[in-house]
Length: 344
Image (cartoon, rainbow, N blue to C red; front, side, top):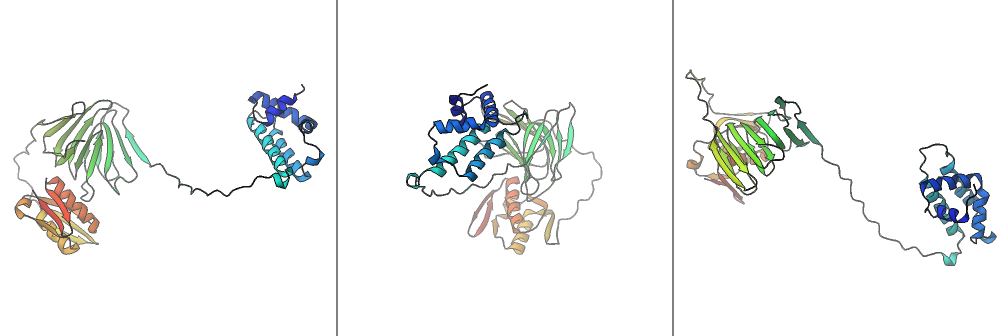
């Protein structure tokens, strides 16, 4: 059916509904003379004729948008925009030089680099039975039903920190330079090599940490840290910020059998690494001073009964080990331009 000049004007200005745009585009493709007549009526006389090359470009733009009219996937709203853009180019071409606006050069904003979203690994148990998984650092995690663990791509290489929702038990692989930390809401539990359980049910405000062996330090948003011994359990209530520590059971004593002879304390150096086996912390500090020139001052009495086993490579890991030893033995560590200072 015939298309009115008012409809053509709305179409070229991009003010038509999708159905009307489709109808007008089909019509103008079949009757290009109607578009020419409309433009003549709007004051486009012979003295404002578009050069042949530019005119063909505008017509091609309209045809390119309408040639596949039978395809249902064609984006018809773009047709009016293309036609309007072509006509805008016509106006600019025919405008007298004196009327052309002066363009001012605007400073170009530096484009911000694209931000890549971090890769997060999610482990979740959907069935009713426990699931044992081995984490990238060698730690074994026993996840209870509905438990969820999350960690990023740097886990096991740059750090050993993960997020836990639900209940899980961790048998932590010994990595002296990278303490193992579990975050459960506002509670974080840090250990070096030990076995402990964290219970942080989803949508609740209670967190429990139970230590099975080794040593851990538990921190909340308002506490400096609470150390647990094997057989102890810590409970924290987020609603009132109340924290309590109690014995959940006595550690099981081994049967009276002839114990295996523990290996003597040794320091092994190979392939640029230093391996400590049940070494007194005082001896560890002496090796760090001898090999890396690290100054560590401490009262021998404060280090009595403190031992360390682990492997390190390089001074950076040595600095990490000093912090780890201080944390797990409840020692105060400070550093100034003369070196490290450790005390009870």
